[in-house]
Picture 1 (cartoon, rainbow, N blue to C red):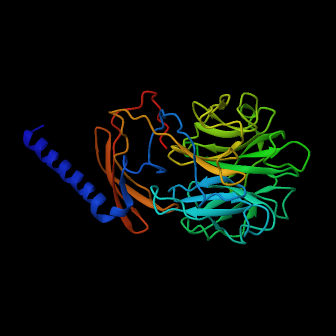
Picture 2 (picture 1 turned 45 degrees about the vertical axis):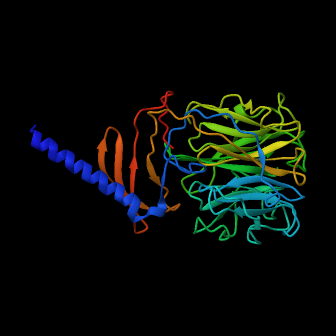
Picture 3 (picture 1 turned 120 degrees about the vertical axis):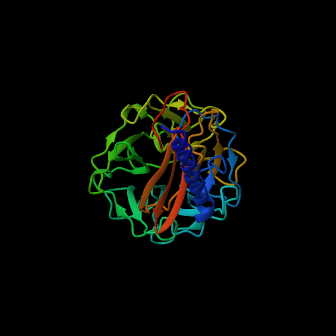
Length: 397
């Protein structure tokens, strides 16, 4: 190998890197962020390793919370839409689903807006959650035409960024819903195995069941999506169920950490927030652990909603100091970085559901520089995998 060839190759490599960097800065500058800048609520390609402890919870304040029940939150992938369930006046009856917006993850939440009569009815409509691409919202409703009491329904929208474009909901069918109450849906999309699982909770005591009663028995179930988009027969998740009230879950995007609401012994109040982990998505969940007195109190804490970067947890509580009955709170944690372990230097988040074609230009020391074409727009990016986490986790997203 000649010195001249090595020099020419090096110059080409530098030129290609410069071109990729220019794509980041020039072609679509609004689509790119430094991985270390505004990570809050970002869905970046990452390995999840260790996190700090959760911070002291903060009430979301009187703009979001009211003098009534504000509970069961859900957070969008970009962190700019917060869905809540509320029985505040001005709705269509019982609990309705509302959405609050903010301009950036550093801004305050705006006043919640009712999703309107396509989603909300005179019956209970609450506890929303989203598919990973943002096109589907799963929620529970007592709307007639189901299988009995509350059922789980799904609504689709063409524009994954339009919070008021939801279409008429469809009942998830007999694989999920029964003559009992089903609610608290959570969707996990396993990208490694190509499997989508719906976690939800079912009331096993005599009806009517209510989500505020810690003495009722609820179990967590799981149903796998079929190839045609329907859901198969749901089965209990025994390692998450205690024989007490085990309800609303939130699952990390890699499927290895799950938060739940439970009244099982060992808590601090009527219902507490608990967490379970597993080694891989092929393994069972380990016995849940209480999140402790920083998060839980002698009052109720429930309905966790986790941001897609797993650093922000929303939930409700009726602890003193709020503005009504149940109020919404938020707690945060940060990733514990290692100096040689910043695997995402630059990244972009394509519009949910957009098709893309990707071409990798350079691979050196684990770096990936390339460009993608999505919806007619060229996106440049640079990813780096210099080193691994100490735990050797190679789960990706």
